[in-house]
Image (cartoon, rainbow, N blue to C red; front, side, top):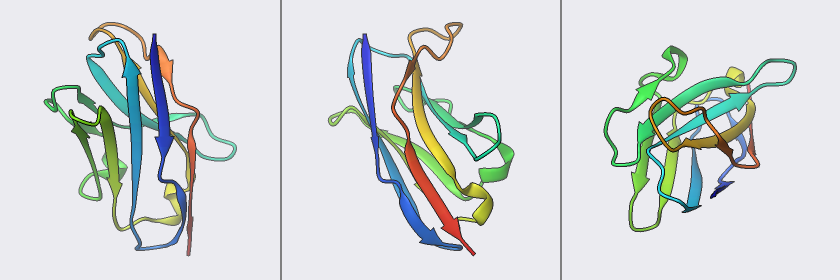
Length: 117
């Protein structure tokens, strides 16, 4: 089993920054990601990285503004979000998988991010 706990959400004005954290515990995971779900929309991929920090990937809309990183000592993955826009408003969740071909089988509870114009 894997437990994921997000924190760091909040409300900011457009152009501001937030850093989300996802603390992981339990089994060793291979890859961890951030997804978001805006009101009335389906959940969407935001960013992911291998647990060793290799192969970071991002959805196009956040390239150059968001950075995914991890702290191995703290077993925590971060999503640094800069230059936030109102369209970034969503519930952000982290997810993990055991192997490259596995589904995102482990999810956190989510944290709300609200960006006002």
